[in-house]
Image (cartoon, rainbow, N blue to C red):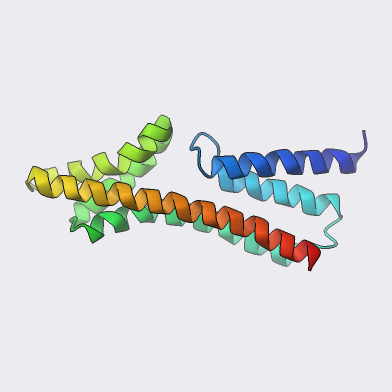
Length: 161
């Protein structure tokens, strides 16, 4: 089998897996997407998509993770959470990754609630902080997906224009 065919096949599979992984926490979506786009550029000997475009895509991979982790803490803060609840939401999001979709959704909520309760805040205030953290995480996932689609868009712009 020709090396170019293998590169294009790998690029297609990894790009699709990367896009799916932006929504499903079981797959490292942004890195898979980046490697898929890298293989596509390599298949064409980096003629259309070169180091500059690939550097932009690499920065976007890092941004997907920063947005994802910061979003739940920012969401909690918008709902009046304390600093400890924001830290709890961030830690809950990180720990939640290891428990799949339920962990991703409930981790920031639980972390924010535990942070508020550790400060002797009311259950009502803790619940609002948890809700804000969960909404922030949902918005973070949407932003992560937008970054992923943007990565594909930048690749296509560099390739065809």
